[in-house]
Length: 160
Image 1 (cartoon, rainbow, N blue to C red):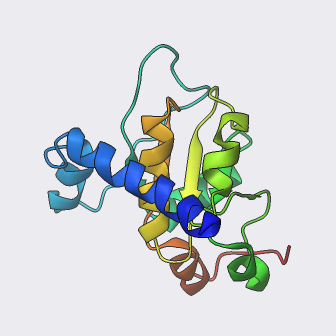
Image 2 (cartoon, rainbow, N blue to C red):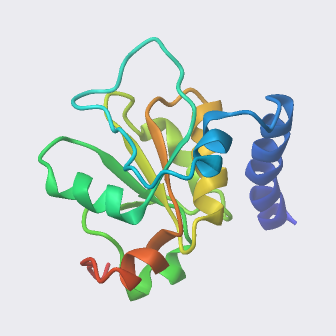
């Protein structure tokens, strides 16, 4: 029962907060309706302070370009630990969403740099990214289509 509560609490919180914020008309909705394939504009340097941002969706290609730059960023993998055994992106912090790792440890994430959230296929990362924004984190990016798309693009991974 305790495991189920750890699973449901962050999920229900994310869903309820999303509904309370209107659920539609967010920049995320505008981006998916935009026919443009232009890359997302990612701020240079540290994240702005004192201003709450919304989740921005990025592609694995956008993330790959970020990983090539020396600018500091945090990449959070929210898949379960057993799902990461086939490979993760180098430097990734693993904080499983479903088993409560993200809820337990999100306060350890810095607010002075962009946070990219990734999972297997993009579903849990979207919920997790919204959870982070709802809990006060700035510059949060959801990686669309997840590590599956990263692997399909033949970008490098490491075995944890």
